[in-house]
Length: 71
Image 1 (spheres, rainbow, N blue to C red):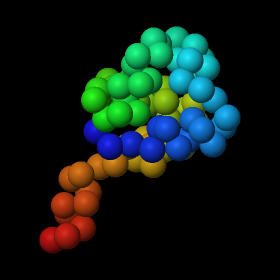
Image 2 (image 1 turned 45 degrees about the vertical axis):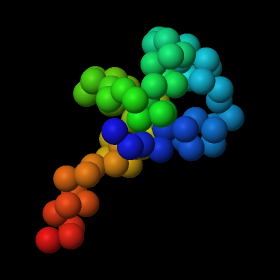
Image 3 (image 1 turned 135 degrees about the vertical axis):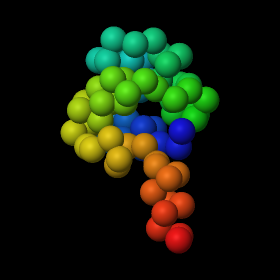
Image 4 (image 1 turned 120 degrees about the vertical axis):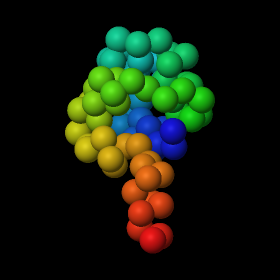
């Protein structure tokens, strides 16, 4: 799932390990989410959004919303 996690993380001056530690997940999880190789669970998506103080919809691209906008 496309997201802007990398941009938000770098904007805060965090490395992947820092973010992983703050969220109590593995660094590999952060790497996979940033690379769009892993779709986080809904609770994890909310944790990420809360950490960066943004709505989930701002963190993750919703392909269904884009499809509806094109109609």
